[in-house]
Every structure is written in structure tokens, then in C-alpha cells.
Length: 245
Image 1 (cartoon, rainbow, N blue to C red):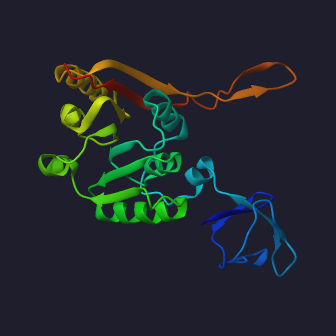
Image 2: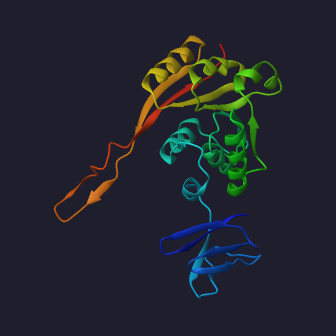
Image 3: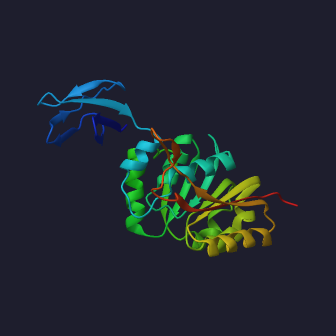
């Protein structure tokens, strides 16, 4: 299991038995660690051991592109109700941030990534997140697997973060169990419109699309207001549900 080791504004991820080398000295990590335990480098600099949480993973997993942000992941979990024992089909793995979050919720996740290098990074990230037992990263194009892969059992949730989401969403009725959800992310409004339209065309219901925006608040002596640093836009999320007629 990986832990977070924190010294003031420094953070490192490592596992028991490893050594961390920095300008603060060598941190020899014991085989047995308790969260909250203080471990000192050979120069006497203290590091606090912490259990990795979701936000820590977002900041410390390897990146192969722009990952889905925690606010988007939170909406997906909230709107679909993903929970332990759910089976999730995820396509467009990227760095695997969404897959890691869902794996830590306890869901069984099968995630598809076309790029072999991205897929390998994602597998390493699943090791860091401690979810290799219930998250499988497959190097393939999901559209090539639809005829054979999903004859066994349906999925509870189908998540998409890929350029061909608008075409893949048409397979949702063949993939999902009754009452199952689709959650499709896109940074572009044109693709989002196609996703929503195709979801309706194949008979999905409860179709809703949201723009995800988050603004940090600033509190000062003169007053309080949202930060002017940016609009906080990350993308669009479309949700739909499968109810067989």
C-alpha cells in the first residue's frame, strides 16, 4: 500500500520499505506504518505518514493528458450512485484518474484505453491507488470489442471520456442492466449535443446535461466574492438511464 509523506509544503508518495531521497535527507520508510506516524530523515527532518485519499491521488498519479477533475468525478458518482459491488465499463482511460476513484469506492471497473503507452501508465497508477484487485485496464478500442466482449453480463454504469462517445453511447442498451446509467464527458458542446441526441435516439431516458463550473471564494477585509482567477469551466457531463420497454 502506498502512503503520502508530508513535510510542510513537500509531499511524496512511497510504500513501506522504500527510501525517499531529497534535499531534506534520506527517508527510510519502515515496513510497518501507522497513519499519522512521524518519520525523520537522516538529517532529522520530520515527515508525517498519511493514507492516500482521492484528492492526493489526483495530484500524484502520473499524467498522460488532462485528467478528469474531482468535481466531474463527484458528479458522476453522485448522479449514478456508483457503489461497492457495481460493475462499471469505462472507456477513454487516459491517466486512469476516474477508474482509480471508482475502484476506491469499491466498484469493479473494466477500463478501455487505445494508446498502449497511456494504458501502461494507467496500470502503474492503479498500483499507486491500490485498486489492481478490482480495476482492469485493457489496451483496445472499445468499439472493436462490443460484438464479443459483453455477451456475459451487463454493467451497472457506462462511463465515456473519449472522442467517439457520441457513437459509442448507442451501444448502451446492449451494455447496461435495467436501470443502469450512462455518464459521458466532453470538453466540447458540439459533441455533447450529439451525445444527448444519440442517447434519445436509442431509447435512453432521464437524459440530462450539465456544464461543470466551480468558483473558489475569496474572503477579505473589504468583503467576500468569487475568485476572479477564472470561470472554473471544465466540461460537459451528460447522464442517461436505460429502462427497457
